[in-house]
Length: 114
Image (cartoon, rainbow, N blue to C red; front, side, top):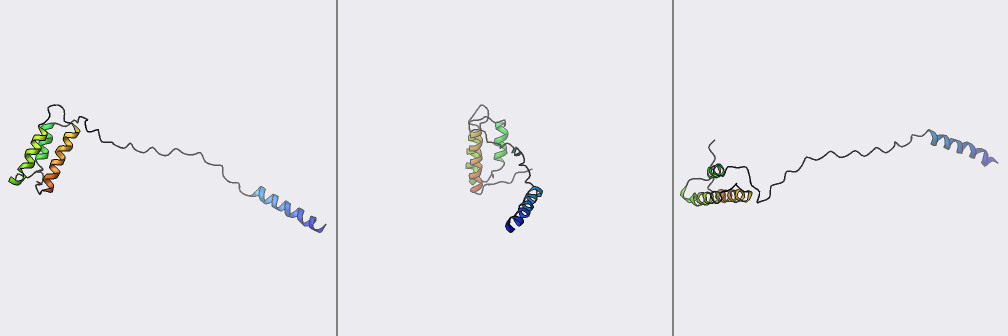
C-alpha cells in the first residue's frame, strides 16, 4: 500500500511536468534559397561578336612592340585579323589573343598609350 500512495503523486507530478513543459516549435516552412545570379557563359567558338575587325586588330597591335624581333608577331596578327570578311568570330579573337600572348612571352609587350 505504501508504494501506491507514493506512486500516485509521482505520476501526477510527471504528468503536470509534461503538460507544462515547452513544446517544440512547429517546423518552419522551408524557404526557397535565394536565386543565384546567372553565370555568364562564354559564347561558342563559332559565335559572331559585335567587334569591329579593324579596331580589334589595331588595339591588339598596340600591345606588340615595334622592335624588329617583334615584327613576326605583328605580321601574324595582321594576317589573322584580315583573314575573314564577315563578322568577327569568337575563334578569330581567341586566335589573335593567343598571338599577343606569344608576343608577350617573347618580351615584345608594348605598354598601351592612353
